[in-house]
Length: 344
Image (cartoon, one colour):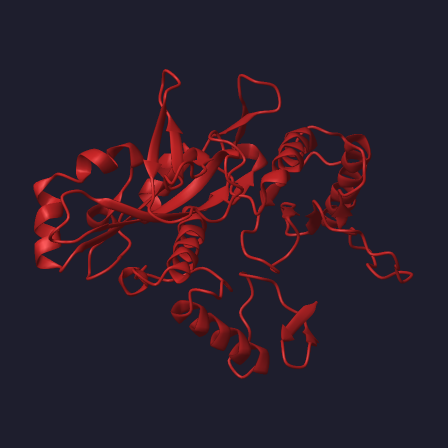
């Protein structure tokens, strides 16, 4: 249950992304209207953005360009399915507490998901984008970009990928994003405007979307700006709403592996990490038959509980102010309760 009509704060039963409203339902019309708004207003991030991922109208408009890049980045991550991971697809990494995705490397999953998406002027991502940010400087001087700049009145493209840190501006230099090479050297892509979406000089990794541009008179490709979103790590590529969510997210993955063999559950779970505000908790645990356990990483638990408020459903788990051990116990109790309900 949650409010769906903003004007009246009416409460209506729904499940995000899985159950469609009836065609005549007034709430369905409200949702459809807001989804339509999000396609045309880069400042409203109410859900995934459908192609084309147009950025040309936002070039030169300052802040709205970053908002549009943020839309595109979240849409790409949603399309690639990186915000959801099943316990059965987790393999232990070389470092304790780190896991690998068995369904593929995050960068490869992203590349496969977005390569045919339409960007500006009918270009698909393979033409308008760069799968590898290291290639920006090299790509700037190719005949392809020069021809595109001539025929399209200025080449517009984007690059979506994972970076290792956000670089703060120093001595008048612009900020940028940094990528580590195999030997540890830092390769920096400087942008002309501020990077948004993360604290400057903070360590990554981050998922990033860069706006690229080259006019017919430019000698090189220009990186205008970037929007970034924290990632758990390079091995899973799980996007997170905030950097401080990395520690509780790792705890959830550890528990998800534990629940596969724990006698009280013995179930595979899936963990979703929503990247849109107000959708649900910071992470949602799904059991095999659909029972959900919501978790909140930095929100305060409600101080007042009505007797029987949750019935036979597991209550949400709040991490704030709790030790790791207590959070683990409450998580396991909630998942065990959901698993028991499934068996019934």
